[in-house]
Length: 481
Ligand SMILES: *[C@@H]1O[C@H](CO)[C@@H](O)[C@H](O)[C@H]1NC(C)=O
Ligand SMILES: *[C@@H]1O[C@H](CO)[C@@H](O)[C@H](O)[C@H]1NC(C)=O
Image (cartoon, rainbow, N blue to C red; front, side, top):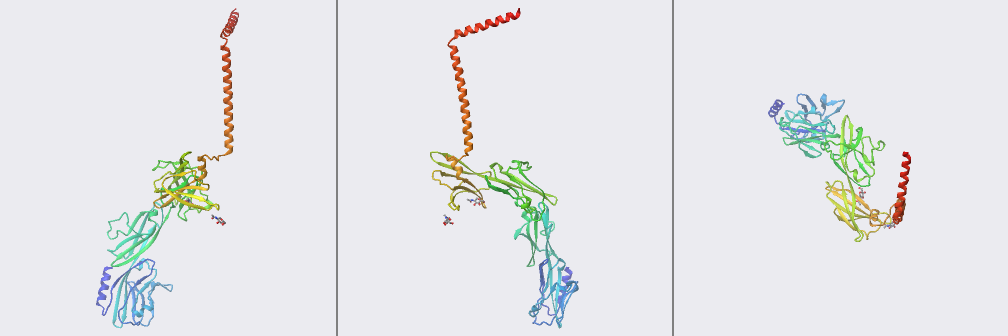
């Protein structure tokens, strides 16, 4: 290659009246490459132009007469991959356009302009940049290689990567191949490395780039493990588990993991209100589930897993349950303290209490009352149709809310509204108990009275006792005889 350049350079320098330069062109595979060839001499169209590639012969040529010819390898079934637009000729521009460039198009091209005895030759080196990702759709955890090839390779070029338009610095750089170090990136397939990979090549003041997309096969929702899901006691919550579209997962399983087993999780019992996905309502790659009515003790870690292409994929998520606890209800002061309780507050940065009111048309109006975990309200001044909502926030905004309804409050302030049948049962039960107690008391009293009567006549008691003894004695002696 070097020799060829040298030879060409020598040829050029010997040519009479030559205005030429060796130009570097970087083009992405599949795109259109423009190889410049400009002539500064006075404008005339009646030139002999020949574009040729290295030792492969003519690419395209135009005779003084205007007739054009294409090299056999550039002329497939009448369709030309190369052309030299007419309208540029007048300006002395004989740039060659190559459509849909391939790696094998890389190399040295020369543009020879002949006018009488005057010959001008321009040399262009075309380099094709291509990004190859293997495999292009990776399953989570698989090893992926992203390769940037430039044909021919520009030694001393600066190769950099961007991932989704932001610079990407490979964690493991191979220092063994200096100059080639940035060419291959090896990564473990995760959502972090999925997206659009671009290889940016800078060489001798010229820039070129090429891109390819790494798609992920796996669980895309939630995107990472230990995602926290927030819900309030009594509400329904969806446990998301969505695989990349088009995958057909087999043997999907949901589990609730026992607490404390971080490294070797032990599956426990799923809550009673757990409802697995119904295949009819979802796409085959969605295996989300739900809890119909969350209880405070339903908090904890949940795990969904499924197999695609022989690989078992799992995703852990954490359900955080919120509730409102009321305390400090005092009859005299008529005040109530509400506290917002969450099973995990590690992501919570702030609490806000809002009052929700409903007008006659059931339209709700929300009013923010105060910040903080607890709220003290005056129960006397409260009106009907009111709810208290505790909103909790994380760093990136609202995480969720939990509502305290007025009827919960009225129960506490003494305005009883409990079930009447339950009350009846309680009354009947109490009456029976009382009756039994009364009977026992009466019996005890009767016994007591009898004893007192006997003790009034102690002598009589002795007589009766002696008499019975004598009778027994007689009976025994009769039996002996
Ligand atoms: C309730 O609805 C009626 C009829 O739609 C309307 O005239 C009235 O203004 C509404 N009231 C409020 C408080 O929005
Ligand atoms: C509470 O959360 C639900 C669901 O996210 C939302 O629809 C509702 O408007 C929220 N309520 C308040 C008062 O923020």
